[in-house]
Image (tube, rainbow, N blue to C red; front, side, top):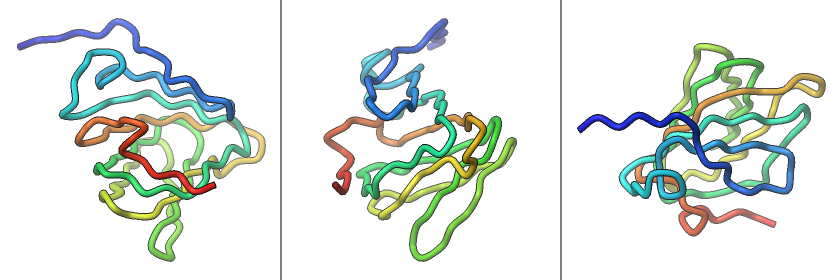
Length: 119
């Protein structure tokens, strides 16, 4: 099988972050994995979450901060980080002034109901 995606589908958000899903439940109706291009505005931060999928993030531009298990790692351009399912994690843009760009690969695919976000 060969499947090209010319453009993704945008997951609606209210916090300024853009999730452009190329493969996954929203754009290609696949549940085994999802692949999304992410753009996080300066000073963006998500609440803590616990997901029912493994997630690999791959930095493109700027720096994505990943906090879990009492650690904080910063993922820059060309770097990657694995967050295992069931891990309480907080994602944020490490910069107060510049956008952060990265890709996210989730296995199985990202679905809102597979993520428990804290208030």
